[in-house]
Length: 230
Image: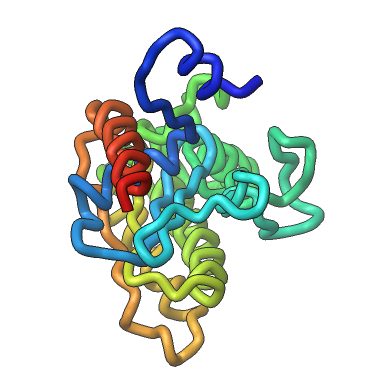
């Protein structure tokens, strides 16, 4: 169903439809951390891993509108099962659910004490893991190191493809701050080609998490209106 056409049938208003990560990317460009940038990537770290790519000031949609699924690039072909039915995708490692799976795996093979051992896997959240890591829990800290190492490695692939000015991390896990940014940045720099090293900024979002949907949607429609005028 063409949602845009359906809305226009009843309302004489401009209509645009996209996913949350693309909307967040436009929101960052108009209101947030990507102001003044023409080439950047937004990574949303939530239940899964979403991504919005902007090149030369325009969202990258690809031939069929589905470009930019960085969360479904492969870390390990024999790795964790993804919700899409395939295996080893990035979002199964670098996301809120991914880090919870990492903690469960670490608890099963590590003997050290951890406050996370008393929490049932179904009740575990990335916020709990971040809190434990802040309190010095070794398993929680290791889980963030593993997550950041994998995320940075795959972001280095994206840099090789797109050569962005910046990569912006957004979402619940990004709120963990240095716990996720530090290992991600180290891994990113380690895996980059020398020509890209120390050039690509890794930034937190400039949008308040509760405002993202509204700001992203408004940025989307402004972008559509401006494109039609040029």
